[in-house]
Image (cartoon, rainbow, N blue to C red):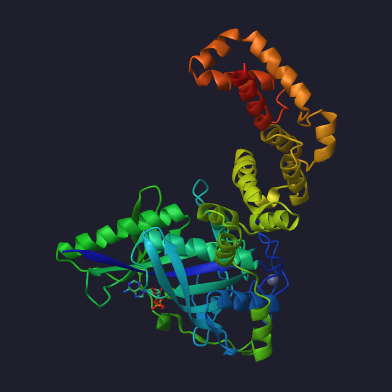
Length: 477
Ligand code: ADP
Ligand code: MG
Ligand code: ZN
C-alpha cells in the first residue's frame, strides 16, 4: 500500500518589539536571569496588563502578508495550566476570537508548488525558561522571556512532505523578516515550530490520527523528525496497531521521537475570557493604512528583478533572500550601476566576502555607493576586472575610498596603446619558443603570451586591448 503523509504546522514567532506584550520590560534576548521582569510579567497580585500597540500592528502586518482576513473585533483568553515557567499559572492568548483567520500562501517547494491554508493567526505571551543543571541536579527559573510577544500561526493540514514544510518555513521567515516584525532566529528561539503529522492510504480522504512533535530547533531537525515519525506511524499501522494521539518530543541525539504526554484538548485548559483586557476593536482605516504601508516582499521583488532586469532566477533568489541585501542591490541600481553588473558583483564578490568572513549582509560596512563607484571604474575602462576585485577586497572591511585607493596604488588601467604595444614587443622577444608554438597551431601558447604582457604591465592592462594587439602582431608578421 502507498501511504501519504499529512502535516499541519503551529509556528510561534517572537515579535521584534522593544518591550513586552503587556508591560514595558525589555524583550532583549538573554540578560542576567530575572532582570527583565516587573510585577505584570511575573504575575504579582493586582498587577494589570496593558496591550502594547506595536504588537497589534506587527500581528496585523503579518496577517496581511499571509493573506488572512483581519478580524475587526478580537479578544484575549486565559489558557490555564500550572508549570514553573509560567508564574501567573495562565497564559494570555486568543482562543475564541483570534486577530486573523483564513489566509493562504503559495509555496514553491523543490517537489513543486503548493498552496498552504492558514487556519488562524493569534497574539499571545511567551513563557519563561527553565534552566536544568544536571550536575547540581537543580532547575532554575528565568522569567526574562515571560511576556515577550508571540504570534502563533496555525496552518491547515496541507503539507504532504518535509520539503514543502521547509519551503513554507523559509517563506514565512523571509516574509516576517522583510516586514521587520521578527528576526526569526531559530537558534534564539524566535521561531519555533510544532509539527502535527498523520498518515493515511494514498487516495483516502479521511485524516489519520495525528501526533504533535515539539522541540524542533532547526530546519534539519524538522525534516528528519518528519521522516522518522511518518515511518514510525506507517510501521505501527502495518503491524495492526493504532497511532495514539499524543505529543512527542524529538531527540536530536537519538534521531527519534518519544512520547511526552497524551494530547491535551482545549477544554483541558479551562480557557475563559481574559477579564483584565478589553476586546481589540480595529477601525477599517487602521487596517487599510497598514495594508497601504506593506513593503514589497521578497517574492514580488524576485518577479520584478526577473521582469525588469532580466536577472537569472537563481540570482533573484539569492539577492532577495535577505532584505538588506536586496536593498543594497536596489541602491546600486539607483546609483546607475547596470543591474546585471550589480547582481554579478553581489553574487560573486559580496556574497563571497560575507561567507568567508562569517558575516550577514546586515553586518556589512561596504556601502552601495562605494561598490557603484568601483563598478563604474570598470565600466569606464579605468580599472580591469581583476584589479577591481583587489580594490574590492581592500575597501570591503571599512568602506574605503575607491578613487584614493586606486590613485595611491597606481592601479589605473594602462590604456595607452603605445605602452601596451611596447609590452607586447618585449614579451614576444623574451619568449620566442611560445611564438613558434603559437604559429605551429598551439592555441595554449597565446594565453601564455597574454599572461606575459599582463605581467609586464603589472596586471593593469585592458585585457581586450592586449588580446587585440597581440593577435595583430602575431598574425601580421
Ligand atoms: P489543537 O487545537 O489540538 O492544537 P488543531 O485542530 O488546532 O488542534 O490543529 C493543530 C494543527 O494540527 C493544525 O496545524 C492542523 O492543521 C494540524 N492537524 C490537525 N489534524 C491533523 C491530522 N489529522 N494530521 C495532520 N495534521 C493535523
Ligand atoms: Mg495546538
Ligand atoms: Zn514586565
